[in-house]
Structures are given as C-alpha cells and as structure tokens.
Amino acid sequence: MLFLFGEDDIRNSSASTPQILFDILDFMSALDCDRAIHLFSREEGASSHCQMGGLAYARPVIFRWLNHALCGGPIQRRSGASSKETIIDAFKRSGGRKAAAKARALVEAVEVI
Image (cartoon, rainbow, N blue to C red):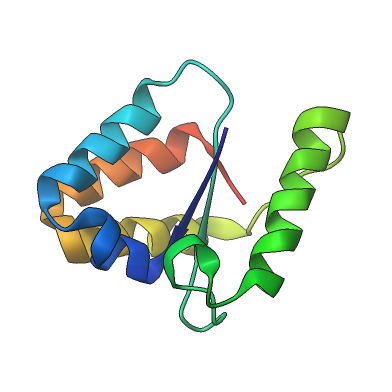
C-alpha cells in the first residue's frame, strides 16, 4: 500500500487534531502488508492535499511504485536517514513527541520512497 503525504496535509486539513495523526499512524502501522510512504515537500511544490500543487511530482512517484508493486520493478528509495527524519519532523510539528515516536516506529518498518 502506498501512502502519500504533503507537508501541508499533515499540518492542516487532513490532521486537524493530534489524535487524527495518532490514528493515521496507528492504522498504517497495524497493516499486515507491504507499505511505502512518500512525503512531498513545499520545496518540491507538491505539499498540498493530494499533491494538487504538484501533480508533475506525484505521478512519477505513483507510477514507479505501481511498477514495483505490480511488475516487480525497482523501487526508487529516498536516500539516508534524512528522508525518514523529514517524515518524523513533519508529524512532530503537528502532533508533538507522541506523533514523532509513532512516525519513527513507522518509518523503520516501511519503505520510504
């Protein structure tokens, strides 16, 4: 399963309360399937809901993941801990330490692409 987030999704409308963030992270952690997560940044121009601010960025991520999931093609991963830390920091800004801890556990268990 592929999860796409924009920085502004996490901070604004999609997660208006910390509890929503906790529930999202708990749901993703509880799934018993392969999971991948991608965070679109403001710097990329794709931080809006469903990446409406940057569909040109969203499509390649989605199609590369589909190629991997359906055809066994290579998955392009973001390199190093910085991408994991970026995801953790995005959740921490809106949900505090508890969200950061849940996000840290999640990114260690999933593919960060």
